[in-house]
Image 1 (spheres, rainbow, N blue to C red):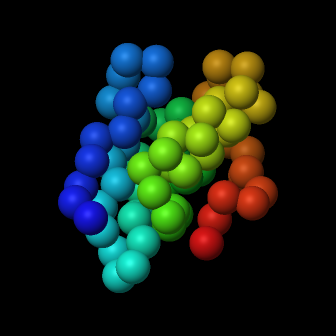
Image 2 (tube, rainbow, N blue to C red):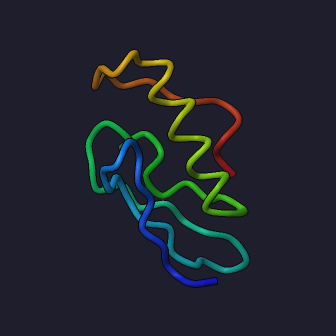
Length: 71
């Protein structure tokens, strides 16, 4: 595993970095801050969590917690 930049809609929103046997997401944009420091099995799993998070917000920056994506 190596670090990877995670993009959403053509914009870098964070990176995933190896952390033990998983990947830790580090947010670099406020609209995905709720996922900061959460662990995922893959970069694709992190991208899916981002899509679900942002779909639930309708593009707004309000704070909410996505269930089922934290490890």
